Image (cartoon, rainbow, N blue to C red):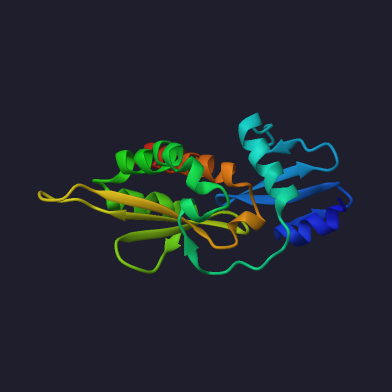
Amino acid sequence: MQPEQVAQNACLIYDASGRSWQLPYLGRNYRVEYPGGKIYDPEGNEVPLYLSILMLHYLVTADGTPLAGQWISYRHLPGGDIYIGPFHQRAIQPFLHSFGRQPENFCRAAAALGGIKGPGRGVNMIIPVFPRVPLSFILWPGDEELPSSANILFDAQASSYLPTEDYAHLPALVITEMKKYLEQHPD
């Protein structure tokens, strides 16, 4: 793949002299070496393998298709209906467990990662994970009569940027980063 084309498809900056892409991830810029594929965080540390794989999948899958601006559930991603149970266990349940009774903390942490308020009912924050991979986290706080509920939605063109399996794992990484932010900024 030509690095300039990858940059265009994934909405990145390619530095030809440094032979690397600048890849925004949750509001921070990472450096991806070309052609080796090593990835470094903003402090210059090599990124763990698991996150590196997701980042490289983004680079090789991105085809430049414009985002639809319409939200779909995991079930509607290609093959998503087969993996819906594990998606709920890996994404929805941890989101509910972490923020179901703390919508204000959810909004604060999501905003720290670049999230903006989304449309619709409930507490909805759209977090840009990669330049063309927004996730819509929606929380409906519970009360004495009803338990909290949640959902995580994807742009209708999500499959143009990552394989469906990656979308089962990506929300957990975002939730972990939100929790880290709250630990570092408890007020």
